[in-house]
Length: 422
Image (cartoon, rainbow, N blue to C red; front, side, top):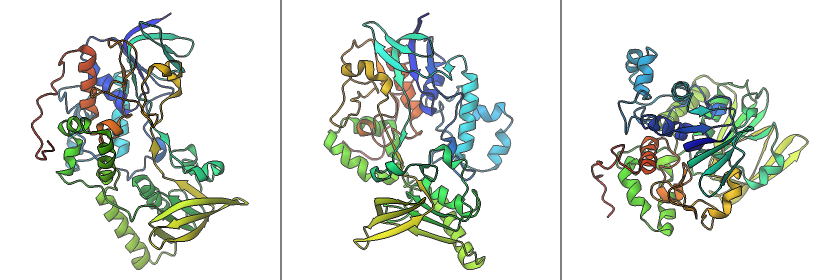
């Protein structure tokens, strides 16, 4: 039987979970679908020392609805954790704690979330969006696409992907055994640094050697200064949206380490640990950090890998060999295949990306009363905050207000930033 919804969401990550929580105070009929059996968030790369890079107050709801029962503070209170948590003196939580908070929220919203329900196709019948799930068809006035990211791997590595040569966000990481192996980690962002450090500490047994190779000039820190943090504000996003597309690309590139740098205190801890290991403890584990290298060629030599790297510091070529190669090479935003039935109705740019409006609606040829929202598909339009959790609650409020066509949530009372771009 067809299900009539005001909004159907595809994907249940933090962004769509935030929207589900923000929508809870409305009278809208909505449901979100995901192929997973329950909520999880990058569980392959959740280490005990992995911290969020934003304040716990920038949770699913608090920035626009601090009285919501889905706030992180309410999570602490309901679970008897408030006082002991405050005694830790932290402004950030671990990524594992954030995942647990999201899992708690998902149980509170269980009537709105449908796991084990992959959406295989989305079409438009002239009045409603039609979503095909497990032997069930749903109809919705509006849809929200929040299907997440796909692992990015260098083209020269594709034919070598295996149980010993894989992207960090892979099941192989959980079942890893590095005992006596030469290990190469490619990528100097937060994930690469965390895997390097955990391998040093024998998380997957003791390797023979561990090297981290990165195209960056070093292990560069996240810029957490207050003026830089204004990039992660509604006022900045609204100003950025009106900038020309050509200008936006340069701005996003220049702001890379405002969003993609390494947590400074994590780098400090790693440096202290390397010092202790090499000069105090006398540990003979062979480790090395190799910046300014770019992978250009891979060879499989009977199960051992030979990699040729361009060295942008010496302008020469370097060779590395390893038994295990872990790619920490980031993620791509990919338009999901499920929208293929109505792809011709949707507007894309020359790079195959959604064209979006300021309210996170996708430009398409259908009626204005039927809206397609896309979350985390608009870094090129809305700026570097788009993939981050910092503004997810605000964005959810924008989506909610757009659906209702009213200011249900107060989002227009922001004071001006100190940085004036206009």
